Length: 148
Image (cartoon, rainbow, N blue to C red; front, side, top):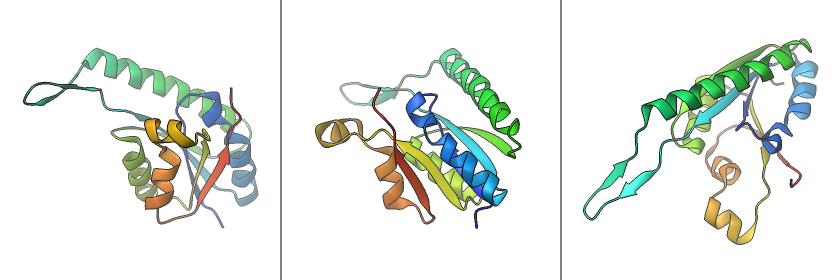
């Protein structure tokens, strides 16, 4: 049923709450798990007539190294359980990068934890899960992560 499961992670325990569900599905269907971490673009500075991106190459490189280390550990944890795992680090807006990578790896399922924000918090922070849900053309497994 599932051959490739894309799992977006951001390094937080909340995002990792999806992993036990993914482990079960991957073992049941002998699926490959693709762990994805998106390194978000730098913030913008608004000037009187223009918008300027803040580009700090050293900071970007450090964030990519941290993502590589993080994903390598998660990959090793899953491989120790006999699960076939690949990792991807992507740069750009989170929702767009998740969708682009789902298409690129031909994922049968995107599995992720939602932070479960509602009301004003959801409007203010945006919702990656909602953005994906409204734009994706494949199954999406969402679990609501516990607060904390």
